[in-house]
Amino acid sequence: MNKVVAEERPVESSDAGVNVKPSHRQPAGPDPTPQIGAGTVGIITVDNPIMSSRDVNVFYGDKQAIRNVSLDIARNQVIAMIGPSGCGKSTFLRCLNRMNDTIESARVTGSITMDGRDIYDRRQDVVQLRARVGMVFQKPNPFPKSIYENVAYGPRIHGLAADRVELDEIAQTSLQRAGLWDEVKDRLANPGTSLSGGQQQRLCIARTIAINPEVILMDEPCSALDPIATARIEDLIDELRASYAICIVTHSMQQAARVSQRTAYFHLGDLIEVGETDRIFTNPRHKLTEDYITGRFG
Image 1: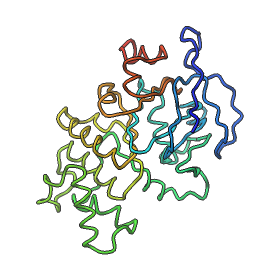
Image 2: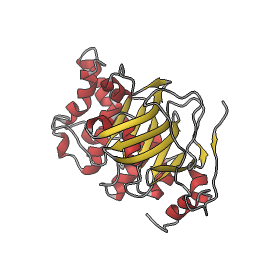
Image 3: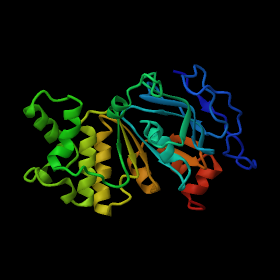
Image 4: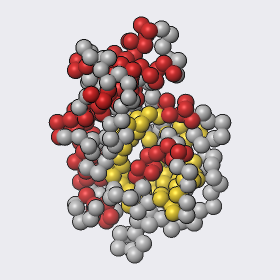
């Protein structure tokens, strides 16, 4: 597959990093010859992506939150999305499972596909999409149910278990994969909210993987956790990438460097640079990226 490389513009230019390419896109539908935003540095494509976005724009009313974002999501890999607050990274993440649909003023244009199919097609079942593309939020949000029911609820409503024995197996396996089983196996009837913050977040991860997604989105999953709980979540992310594509939004550059294989840097709604994590943090090619990771702003 030919890799598409965005044109690199001199960083001293007064509009460096800002996408000024005029757009004449239709609201949806894959573009067979996608044009990469002029502000993006790096290779945005991967071989055999599970998800692809091309020229994605998001508006909240009259305010444009992200501009012409094009990015592939690789299988069995962690991609970290970094950038200062309000740069559009969480907005883009929510596009990948249509969470922006829940915001009345939100409007999304461009193309986002999963296995080659447009996820914004009117025929797309959003419930099924969110089963394939799960999400873990910034703050742990267990259901007001028992620990067991938090994990078993999804497989039950999606018809993934034929009987109680199979449902028990799914719940146990999911809790084991989330590294929580040994801590809760003797109190599965207790409320999920009775767990510590780090345990609650691992419970939410167990709940997500219980319905066997293909992609896991994580929006700052460790921001409310202490360092020990954060380390456990990071170890879990590293284990899970063998089975899932993982997209994580984080304000911690150290965390991005530890858990991801690719990094995408956003700034004021533009995707500025994307590349292998080691290269981004040791040899950034765009001055905005360099300024951010060296602490000059952000």
